[in-house]
Structures are given as C-alpha cells and as structure tokens.
Length: 195
Ligand SMILES: N[C@@H](CCC(=O)N[C@@H](CS)C(=O)NCC(=O)O)C(=O)O
Image (cartoon, rainbow, N blue to C red; front, side, top):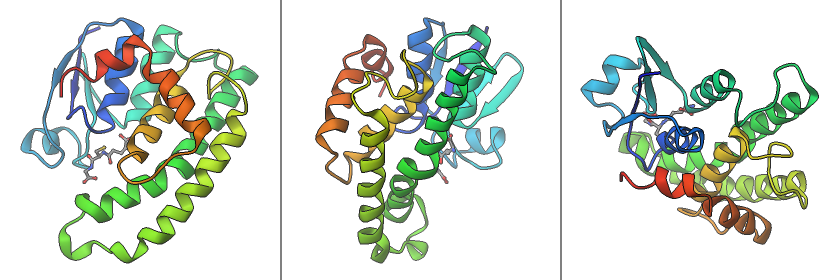
C-alpha cells in the first residue's frame, strides 16, 4: 500500500495516524490545513483528513478507518458478525452523540467565519456533552474497550473525542480512566509525534 495522510495532527487526522500506527503500516504525513489549496483540490468539503491510497483519494476519518481495518482484518470484527454490528452501533453513537457537541462547539469557536458563530449555544452544547458522556459511561460499563472485546477503530474514535472534549469540558471519571488507558498505547504516542 502507498499511503499519504494529509491534515494537521491536531484534527481528526490523528485518528488515521493512530490507526496506521496500530496497524504498523508505512505512510507519509503531510500537514496541509483545511481550506488550503491542496485540500480543496482533493476534497470538495475542504476538510481533513484526506488519505491518498495509491491512486484513490479517501476522505472522512471514519470511512478511512473502516477501509484500513477491513482490508487488514485488524482493529475490527468480522463483517456480518454480531460483534461487528455491535462495534458499528458504538461508532454510530460516537458520531451522532458524543462528537456532535464537540464539533458544534469547535465550529462556533473557530471553524465558521466570525459572523456565523453563535456562542449563545455554548451552554446547550455543554448540557448535550454531559448527557453524551453519561451515555458513554453507561455503554462502556466496566469493559476495557468501547467497541467490543478487543481494541478496535471504535476506541480510536472514542479516544479522539474524549481528548478533544478536554479543550472545552471536564470529562467524567470513567471517561478519564478509559482515556488514560488508551493513551498509554504506544500507537497513540507515535501518532502525536508530528505536530
Ligand atoms: N466527518 C468528517 C469531518 C471532517 C472535518 O470536519 N474535519 C475538520 C478538522 S477536524 C475540518 O477540516 N474542518 C474544516 C471545515 O469543516 O471547514 C471526518 O470525520 O473526517
């Protein structure tokens, strides 16, 4: 595989970097910013991450994680199995509940043009995040991993969201312990090296 990850580390790009580190695959990393000429030419949404995968251009961090894990058969569960459906359900929760208040908080803090930002929604977003954090705790229970019996791409997305949440909010004790456990993995440290 010839893989080039494009996007700054301090974005959802880090999900892709961490996945590649966990898989032990070789890759290049280029730090182009969202809305830069280079990104706009690759992704009509003007967003990062972008993965150049041979001749193919892949976008969306979750789609990229699915592509890499399905192709290698690692960090995931067998397609069609109940374990896989459970992991998919956990990822759906992460993207539709835990990530949403974080993304909206970021959009209205620094992503959107100034005249479109609405900081008056911040208290509502904080309440949404609290609720999502409680749901995360309930789903995790006393399990080691969020997506199933082993470390999976669900843990990459969950960890990234909880790390991102630290920019704005205090996370629950359970989430903090989970985050510390995930960040102790060597792949996490390696994924953060090129900032
Ligand atoms: N669902 C996409 C979201 C990508 C995204 O919004 N990336 C942010 C950086 S983390 C970005 O490029 N923002 C610029 C913008 O939305 O205009 C993914 O997971 O890759």
